[in-house]
Length: 189
Length: 225
Image (cartoon, rainbow over all chains, first blue to last red; front, side):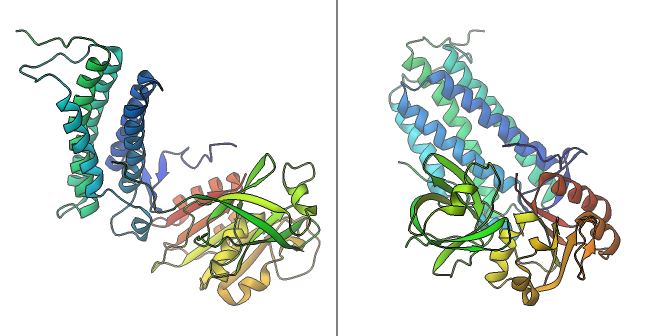
């Protein structure tokens, strides 16, 4: 199956809600970064390997959530296309929070800043965390630029989810060092 | 805790039996399959049909309220699945999964323009059979023999324009030329909702034409390979 249609050959792309927009649009930058975040989490999953099935399944669930968020970002809020997208619910946010709490309970208490890194898998989690923070900034920039009023509910929950996901990925990085028996390097001035 | 997050389409596996086959032309036919009890879909969606070890994707041409499901198949000589479907006996079992896709009708204040090439007409047949009306439909085909669904669109479409290759010698009130020729010459300026289904070359060319001549329009696409 050929994956190209060529409709983007002249610098425009189509939104899920049908509009044709420039590929330099702030909206496209926001879901472009979302794509990078999803790919970085994919690298983290690959680094973990199938033997760590529980965190892998959790991260792949998050990758599926990110596809939903990308579809939301590619849809104008007043479009009937919005009805097709399931969106992000409170339970998705609780999923992250519960997982953070579970991992933190298994880790030594954090008393100082740690250097991002450690085991290569933990380093991937830190990379994903920083891409996640940039994605969050891009989404905020897009919402600030395109919405005169407060962001509608579906976008509000996306902001909460992405903010929580950065925290989650920080804890995953620490958890990976714990999992692979790699000491965390504390920041020393 | 596991939570499900996805677009609002629940893909499941189903089994079905061939009820009937209706030839539409020398090369194309409709197959009617039993509709599994829990199978639900929207007009414009497609299923992945599995027969033995072969699978192919087909848009549904039936309405979701019909008692069975129908697919429009073009018999491709040397094809992987279509020859088998063209002579499978009534009662033959098929597995499929679906529904797939988001090429569904979205109500709007702008006029809708449906553009299809060949069997890319299928999603529009399902939409028309489900009560969607008032659209302009352009259907690009090689010959008049391929206009087998015209009766479905006579009452549903505001305007139904078969666009037939200039090489075709049949009589009839058809536009001679490509769908892009018709759009360029005959569609009044303004924003529309375009629904494009068919070969990727058509989708690419119509998309660029819309960018150029119909700014502010929406475009929804489904590519048939």
